[in-house]
Image (cartoon, rainbow, N blue to C red; front, side):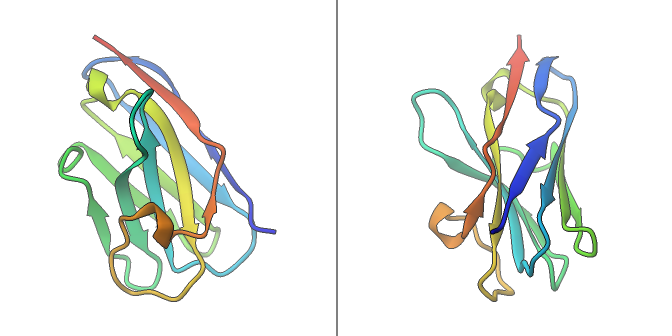
Length: 124
């Protein structure tokens, strides 16, 4: 059974930084992603990384501020968030795809497993 556990959320002032981590149980993963869901809104893609190619990709709203990275030998995945804005406030989810892929995946239905989420609150 695949398990994903996020950590690193919290409360930060606008302009500040947070680093989220995701620890995945042993398994074979092809793509790891981060999504977020703000109250009253739909879950949206934030960032992803392809394990085979190392390619990273981002939502336009976070480009230049967020960086995703990972260690596929340890099944760990991180999201460095800088220059945070109040609109970044959300529950952040780690997601994993176990189906083979080498291309970018930004839809929630393209991922197979999800963590429980970690809350990020950015105050103005």
